[in-house]
Length: 176
Image 1 (cartoon, rainbow, N blue to C red):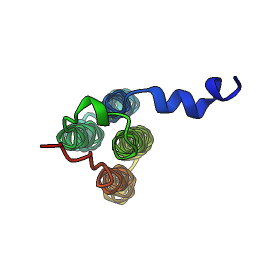
Image 2: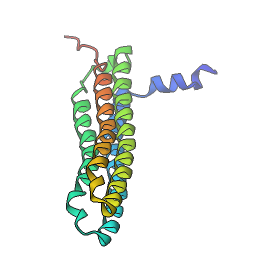
Image 3: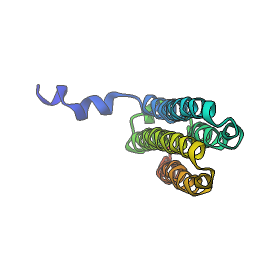
């Protein structure tokens, strides 16, 4: 009786296609959330600092573009993960290979989504600092922009790890 209510039994009973769909949704949804949050942080500081120094608005838009790139990372990985889905016969939906493929796509989506959430926040906070610093001293712009590029690399690391993990998604071969 105890075995029928365990988490492992519940996880095995959920279709791998459900896990795959949730992973793909998390990859794109949480990445867009990270981008929006970063744009919110950067944009509010940029508009506020532009009151003191209107010259900063055009060149500090690069910070908003870096935030938007985070959403694009999520879209790219979602497309890659979607191409990993394959149809299998109903007799093999719960085969270990199918479960592994579903879990791999799910894990890949979670990693990419949350890496891009943190990346969006990081780029947003650094972009905010860049706008505020640039309003005070224009020689600081390039120095802080380099730091912002390193922050943006966090999202690329998540994409790379997600692609590596999605390579584990191999579905059972169809019976002829």
